[in-house]
Image (cartoon, rainbow, N blue to C red; front, side, top):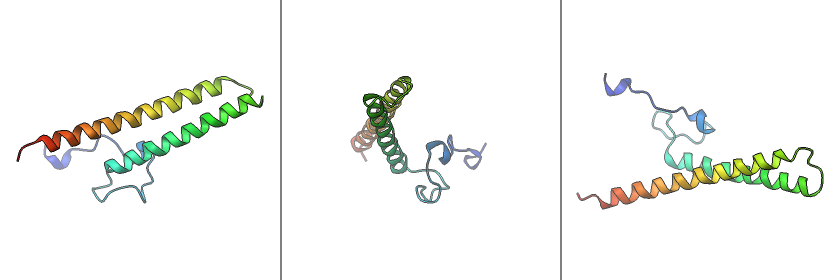
Length: 101
């Protein structure tokens, strides 16, 4: 097997990326900044959903209180994913910087 036969583990659509704007010139594979920006936007969206569900529950307009629980869980997972990605990026950066040339 040659290196050209190896396929990427993901497609850009799996990360919710707009294939016209957020893809690097590297054969359609998203760069780390694109993936991190998508994670940040996901955190913003899930937080907005949670805030809206909290407002609807507080005003008595929410028929199903499970929606708030689901929105809370989605927001927690989105934040956790973004923090883990940041930690891995910092760990990688520190590893590269500690390498001797």
